[in-house]
Image (cartoon, rainbow, N blue to C red; front, side):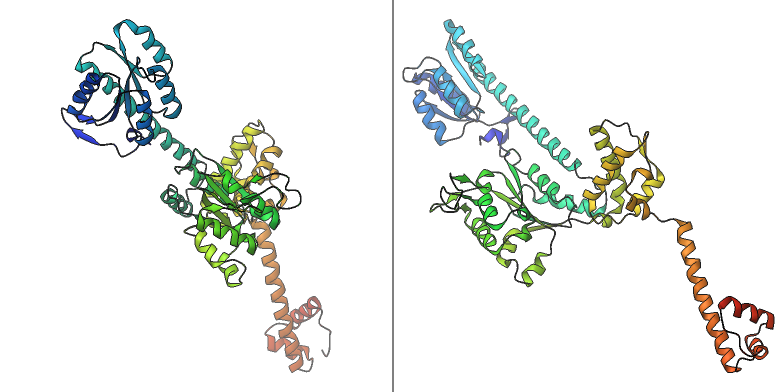
Length: 475
């Protein structure tokens, strides 16, 4: 990376803020090299000189430069050929052409080929400094645009995560802190909580964002196929291996590999994965050579890996390699304050997909949604809202567009009170019946004495006996 394109730029104050640059000057005339060196070093710049194009290419391979000046007419490698080499191998370096007064046409051709600017001989000291100033201003502007794009991209990534609840805000803060590190991350949470979405956000906020993000569900592959998918295989390694195959670890080089359902992998795959994480290299199945790789691993699980370790189903050494940073995703029932926002988000999403004009969710439907326990978490809510968008009539999502189980879970005061009254009545009849039977037993079935003990009239006692189905005895 060139100094001006990194965050390690050096600033000094001399007649205002000046950015110091590392500059390469290429010319076959010694006095021109000395002139440039004198002028530029006097203003604080770091200058290297080359007597020809071949020497310039050699210097470019050894050191980073912020910009370069080059004469067009040189015996070993002409300026146009050098420009083509630089634009191919070092496209970020601004290239300023030095040309004689009578060859303006060549300078124009150079500009068309990608040169940043040109100087016409003879020139003054201020012309050199003006050209350098243009380049540095351009670099500053380009860096600022890049920074703003990255900042906007980061914000857009965060916007994909709907969550104002404290639990989700804590998750997002942790993601922001660890995203641009090289640490492996283990995301834990129930199915449907959005583990892959968080993994993608980690990738998008990292310096690997422009490289591959590859996701693999470890739970869907049998052991031998998973090993082949992850690590690759050599031709003839097993039946059906008719050619060499590059595994996902190599395919994700310089990027991020997301291993979902990591708790399902077999002991053999666990051991091989551990070796890859330790050695930073992959040996394809059936191969005798290993391949170096630079991959950031993010894993996810919906099972308790600590319990799996206690049961000797998951290697502790692998767990500690994967869980350098752990992120625990809350279940939807633990972040109920996000349900409304998620519901409207999915309503708008699927209204757009299915070209439906929907503006709101009725209070009754929202009440039913809020009361649902959502065992399938955000994924289940999204499926329900997609169905509701398809089945809704008019501009509103109402109760009838929700699945029956969601509607049935909605509390209904009338339905709640009726069973409660029945319970009270049933309990009252039982107690009343037992009291009358006990009194009748004590009085040997004498109704008059029983009524007196219970503090009621004989007629009331007879009514209760008939209502409660108690056999009549002595009067």
